[in-house]
Length: 198
Image 1 (cartoon, rainbow, N blue to C red):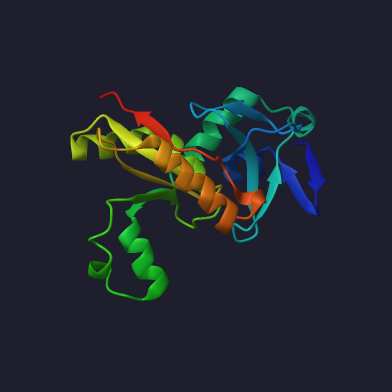
Image 2: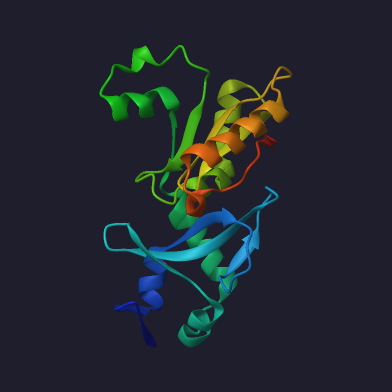
């Protein structure tokens, strides 16, 4: 079995299969293995996660060629690994965890939901988990969500209705990016609508 050492980590096919995930990033020029998403300005890429989830190796075609791995198969495995960790919780729950306050203190807020993975590290790609998004749409009996790309680590969603001012929401995302999100962790500068069919 071919093995390659990257950043001091020995990588072979088995290691890749167990540790490959999908990440999201702003569209950019790079040699990453990547694809477009349904969100303009956002692309998905493949990475290997190791060492307590906080270190990654971004996959390039040269690595796949050396290991003799098929890109299409790898995307399927990466999506399965990624979506096994999808977590959708209310923003109220997250704020309660962060502050130690009672969740009821935050429940009067706008019904926002945090879409990420279990570790909330590079978890924005959970927004691509349409199975979970459809389940949520059925629960709310709706067919549209507004998606706010919070960072590469998470997205926020809320039920869409005709009162949603998309321009205002886009301005809010843009301002939050400028003031609170490091440029390397910004995902996009606009709000999106997710349409769900079920």
